[in-house]
Amino acid sequence: MNDVTLKPSQSPLKGSLNVPGDKSISHRAVMLGALANGKTRITNFLTGEDCIRTIEAFEQFGVSIIQDGSTITIESNGSEHFKEPPEPLYFGNSGTTTRLMLGILAGLPFFTTLYGDSSLARRPMDRVVEPLEKMGARLDGRSGGTYLPMGVRGGGLKGIDYTLPVKSAQVKSAVLLAGLFAEGTTRIIERTATRDHSENMLRAFGADLTEANGAIQITNKNSLTGTNVQVPGDISSAAFFITAAAIVPDSRLTLKNVGLNHSRSGIIDVLVQMGASIDITNVQTIGGEKLGDITVTYQKLKATTIEGDIIPRLIDELPIIALAATQAEGTTIIRDAEELRVKETDRIKATTEGLAKLGAKVQPREDGMVITGGATLTGGMTEAYNDHRIAMMLAIASLITKDDVVIDDISSINISYPEFFQDLKTATGNG
Ligand SMILES: O=C(O)C1=C[C@@H](OP(=O)(O)O)[C@@H](O)[C@H](O)C1
Ligand SMILES: C=C(OP(=O)(O)O)C(=O)O
Image 1 (cartoon, rainbow, N blue to C red):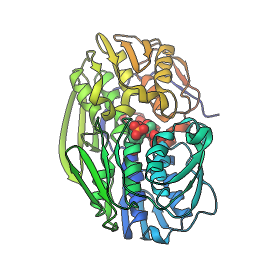
Image 2: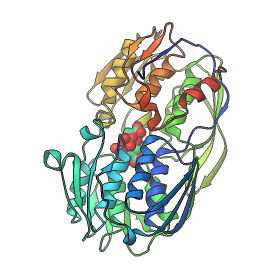
Image 3: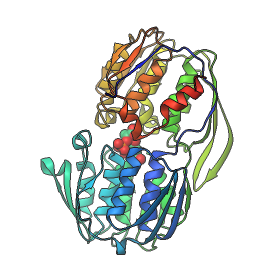
Image 4: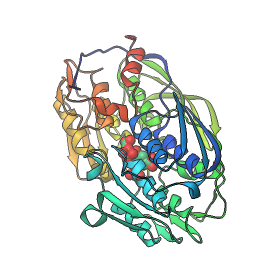
């Protein structure tokens, strides 16, 4: 059994933590390191299950990848030397692996099949299949090419001009990666900015990528060259502790070396707007990615409205922001977040149900939720729906409940934050 009963703690969070490496950046570092010629060394790599799935995929192509704790060394002669994988590729729970790899597989001149767990099998892939088919790739999957399992016969791509119909960095990245293999230029226009780690890292590996007049352009002119990547701490993992310190009285906690890329740091802006006390220090930029230390001191919060262009900047943080909103004065409204419905689970349903079971007043909306603040959370039996972000949100809730919080299954936490409970103990002084 993977269930857990968390006793109400009310312990303030103190001291400092180093959260694990950024998941989005870790995936991309392995992908580009494998596609590049030469040696790539990745430090502070996230060893969570999703990123391991990405490593395994390239091992099946014959790429040498050595893991030593959170340091990864890749030696590659470039994608011309990849061999057709003998077995179907298994992508587990990872949407990022699947969608970005589809972009790469579309460019590789052989046949690949891929599948994932029951959550991944429910996530829409047509958003990636559609532009890749326009580029000339041949893909098929369940329900007319919408869902895994899928098969891809790659090669023979040509560049396209593409305006993203969904606010998705995964779709943007899939098209950019396919653009590395395409004849001519691939141009992408985003109406709403999404995380730009692919762009930053493609540049760091020497790709011919430019941005002009709101369009991102890539050609296959330059081959990629191996490089060193230092992965910043994951702000999406730090978010659980940033929020914990913002809602547990007397807390003062520092999260060190956390990624502060503007396209990811929406949670800081929202919490500050809600009245949280947040200080950012030791800011530096490495490999095009900003990072620094975040210190949060407990202070009473007030409600806010979260909508529009900020949504992609905090999309994965909305479950934990919803918990913060239960403690704020007033009613918080979250809109324009319909993408939450197609994550590892339907996160609008899972968040509102979970918080309601703990005694909060929350209502789901088609594209968000309405949260009445000032709630005293009781505790209760909850379900994580096999979703790491929901499981961690429920665990953080137990810091402010009156009674026990039971979570049906916490194993999903290994997807993005294997050390989560150890870090929780350390920060609450129970380590
Ligand atoms: O590109 C990425 O690394 C990610 C993009 C986002 O997904 P979408 O592109 O589906 O919005 C995010 O939710 C996911 O956790 C990681
Ligand atoms: C949505 C997430 O990841 P993915 O899409 O890679 O499964 C996440 O980590 O919250």
